[in-house]
Image 1 (cartoon, rainbow, N blue to C red):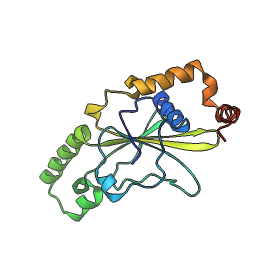
Image 2 (cartoon, rainbow, N blue to C red; image 1 turned 90 degrees about the vertical axis):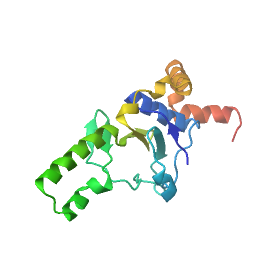
Image 3 (cartoon, helix red, strand yellow; image 1 turned 90 degrees about the horizontal axis):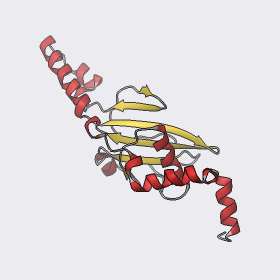
Image 4 (spheres, one colour; image 1 turned 135 degrees about the vertical axis):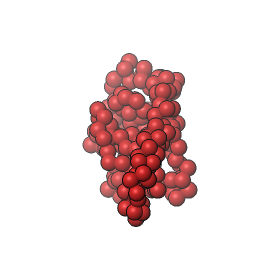
Length: 178
């Protein structure tokens, strides 16, 4: 499984993920997660995939999520435990005091439960998707604090031509790598 560990806080950090993928530092996901990989998702897991005609078009992880909320350029989701999902609650006929107890459980899950943050970024006719899982209480350490991403950020700011795929292809041709 090709994943990173950290927390994507800003749009700029998501862009760094895309450029790290483009430059070959991160290998994007090319197939859906296997059942055991879905079961092992945890706070801090970050995935990148490139949308293609014969590859992944839509991310699935087997979890139940709340409706999305927009936060800047990101979509945010909260995991809904199976026993608290709307369909599970409908199956049980609950008394009013049981509903109050369930609402307290749901609020507690919001603080401690897994969240998903997604963004789609189009660069040179390709759509890159960044998917990050986190628990709000552990979301302090951002990618820019990781030396690897700090160096990529520095390089892209110092040499903006690295952002162009055409520049990279020309450099590769000059060096006779092809």
